[in-house]
Amino acid sequence: MSTPFKFGFVDDDMTEGNPTTGNDGHEITNSSAEEKSSAGAMPCLHTLDDLPYHIEYNTITIPSADHGEITLGRRELFDIRAQLMAEDTALDDSSAAGLSMDDIKPNVYEGGFKMWECSVDLARYLATQSGSLSQTLSNPCTIIEGSASNSPRTTIVLADFNASVLKLATIPNILLTYHLGDEVGPDGDVEGFDELGTNFLDFLRRCNVKIKAISGSWGTEFSAMALPETSEIPDDILILASETIYSLASTRAFTSTLLDLLKRSEGAGGKARALVAVKRVYFGVGGSVDDFLNVLRELGGEAKVVWTTDGLGNGVGRCILEVTSSAKEAMT
Image (tube, rainbow, N blue to C red):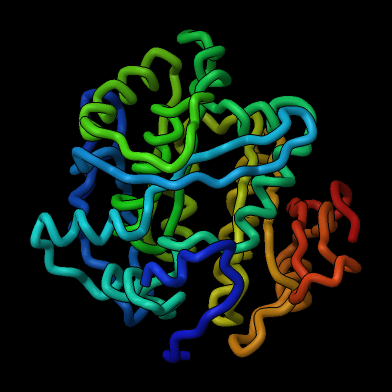
């Protein structure tokens, strides 16, 4: 499939038209690494580099049973365009596709610049959960601050097919959340944004938290970067994924990678689960929940529906699946 297609965004996003290790232990890579469109892209690690001095952002509000409403900031798409023009940066295929009217261009740009419906479903679901999941969404920096420096390291892995998405949107949004904290007002801008990177790394070191960002295709190389077998496996692993099964061509690769990560944790005696937010059917592109479940069971996993729009009469059905690698832990 090479024809771009469109579906299901939350707001007006559509109209917006060789790794090294630093002294802080965070992997750093050249952000100009190629993203090959022919056979996917080899996974590559990225962290805080080349941050813009100034960003503009808008806000999204997530209803929460425990915390009222949670307001989060996110970088404006037009601001990403402005940065690229100011830097006189030649756009690679992925950036050009992501900043155009195309929602997705398979194996070139996978939609990361724009907010898809199911990602908001997932955030809303997390906000309704009691305990640490809801608290982490409402105030992630408070949770990190509560971690003692001598406690086991917490690792957060961020992933997108496109390195440009991680550099221009994902990582700036993480820093924006850190900067704004609970004081998220209306849409606004932040000056001196590049200086936040240094402060943020100091903050992570104090709290024994590591963030890794990985671009590229699903597969064993991705799993090895996200959760190396030679490292100490965390006691608990939670994987969050949204709209990752829209294409039959990538469903098996995603499912295999998902189960590989879950099994790495369980094999080391840890607890692991995944929450996957999806549409019931992706019309015109072939993916569906049924196809995902068939592949999942074939590869030795199970899933149960923990949230659904079924019966609400609001267009294409959507749901959130809790996935485990063991049949005894989840029943469909």
